[in-house]
Length: 150
Image 1 (cartoon, helix red, strand yellow):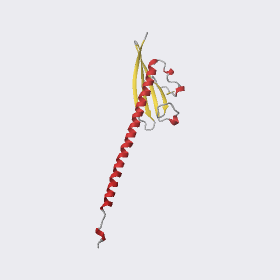
Image 2: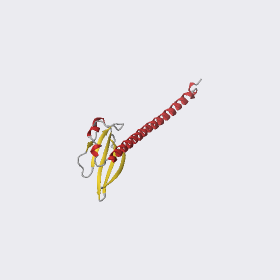
Image 3: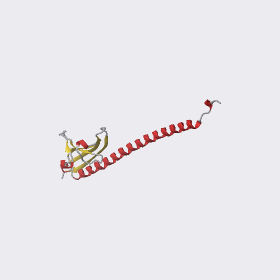
């Protein structure tokens, strides 16, 4: 009797099935990781847009006096004088709430400048949210408000 010809094909099939399931699991893990990262990025952009819109709406009430909105007690700091543009910034956490520099993962930056025209003034605001992890700009919103001379 020759024992070399008595092979069991079930073992080979089992190995092939395990290989197939391993490869499938690897692909699914990659898909779930990518979905999680996309969801996190979308959440940050949504929060950034909401926060930036909120700041802009408050600024529109009184664009001539931004100090009333961007004061230190709320976590805002003013960047050193950069000519005609005033820059305020705040360190934020994942929820875009004000935190200390050591705890921050995002920075909200607001640039303000004014154009003086013959009939009034045009006040501009640009708000952006930057990631401190990778330096990526998540959100940029701009608007302006015209105030005529009386």
